[in-house]
Image 1: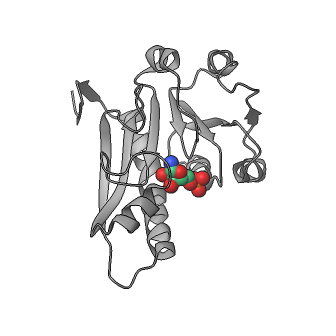
Image 2: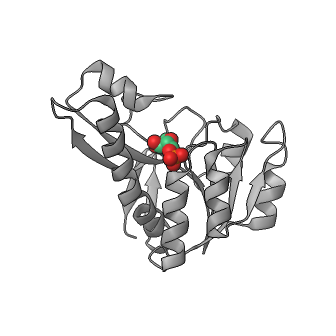
Length: 192
Ligand code: GRF
């Protein structure tokens, strides 16, 4: 199977996916990194020998053409800072997957780690979900919680969250590609 990764930023999650693909732990080809802007992810892709596709403006104009060409089994969002238009969600659901740095439905949208930190919650975490037409609202595939300790500043929490993301995103993608699952309404369950 194959995946493409969409990113707009730093690209650390993309890098782990590409590395795990190269090492054979993630049993999938990473066919391309797709970006909507100049960003750190591009340099990482070049170093790893992954093709980079830069979407023209508006970013969704060529999206379907690119997907028809690459035919990925999953479209993996990793810090892609765009809302996916309804016609794209309708066409590809449930093939688009996103990772979000909070325990949804708490703290959707931008700066979720800071939102959680500033709110003063004692537990936060990460969520991996299918993308639907809302913002961070799709069926939840995986969550992992982390307790915020009193001596952590925002940077500490950020690095802990990113570590959780890097440990788990590739495993969940691998499971989606190689294990049966069902989506019934909002509920995602493993097995036939
Ligand atoms: C991650 O925290 C992810 O959860 C969010 O955007 C961030 C991307 O980080 N959607 P990176 O670009 O993969 O380093």
